[in-house]
Length: 533
Image 1 (cartoon, rainbow, N blue to C red):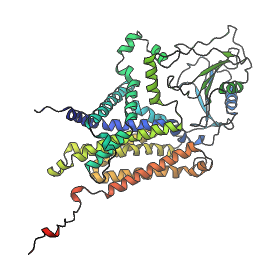
Image 2 (cartoon, rainbow, N blue to C red):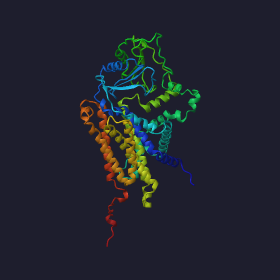
Image 3 (cartoon, rainbow, N blue to C red):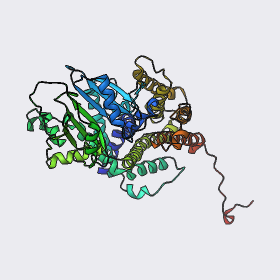
Image 4 (cartoon, rainbow, N blue to C red):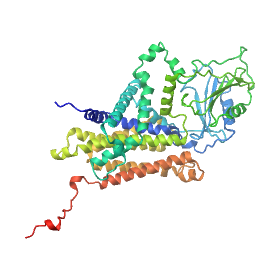
């Protein structure tokens, strides 16, 4: 057997690593790309909050509500309005209740007047974010292992692709339309090279986020099993966060003006404060902690600064100790900060979003290219082999079907009754039911018709969402544009743009004719070579 050259070996690795996990990678990349705007998606999926507008009294409204509803609580948490979510979110923990993520009582408030908002139950963009690295319905660790292996395959495919295509950068400037396989390869090259640094960074940083599960031995050895100690250092925070309390008996006490403490804290924070936490409120032990919104340092992963005050006297208290990360931890923080993107403003999030779409298109064109390259063999056989037919169906059901499932998830959010039990779960079930139908549909239709029908349906459903929002009092595109509410208008405009792209794709696929079926015009011979009778 003839030995393969380096490029041939890498071509083989690139082809099969990309194909065998390509459909999973497409889903991970697409949902990860949408996760750059998960907060905006979540807000859009809660139209009851759309009338909320932040003002200088928003924090006072939240404190008043908590004082009325939970005067003897162990802790109050307030999430302040932001450009990504203009509603107030409050949470409190009763005495004796375990304080931690996911517990306590929650309430959404109108930031304008502090009135409670009855918000529909939904996972919002958080479902897409979690699906990106934990899938759904599988044990968490198993799902992360699956995504980790797929991410490693993605990194291998990127590196082997660069080695395989020796003219990849030259070919980036060349696109030959209507050339079949050549056109698909040009599209694959262009989407790969245009955002190649992003593709490498986002894949490598994704592996870094999972490396303590995939390869935990070094960490366990260096920290003697104390993983939290490493994460505290990597995050630039001290391990424990001691809270100094006086030793007097707990007694009711009048708290100082916390809104004034908030104004004091925000003077040096360009992006303002993200949250307020009050421990032991309305007692002589009360302490206030105010957190900065998204610090601009990659080293602390966008967490920002934290300031503490005595809630009775208003005097500043020592904050959590800040640990200077070493070179290795600093490098880890930079890469993972770029992946999570908590620190970024809208321009950088849009840049990452577009780069993520290019990565998604790169995977999609690679999957389609695999089928197109094998068309001559199929034509010689006069039939489609079972394996190729399965790949064709998976391509349609994933490349077109997953966006259809996502828009179905959005439609379920709009149409399911607000009072429906387990409403958020039914939204997710709608997503998977539609995706399952999209995977089955190509097996019942011709390859071309399946593409056209799913692309066209996706265009109609995406376009219909902004139209439906016109029936909601504060959510319609005309209203949001008139009020310069770009948080909601941006979502609807993005949906309309997506609809236009899917509609254009459906039109192009419907007009496409295979090369073998095109009628060729007879070539005119030069007059000097014409035969005479």
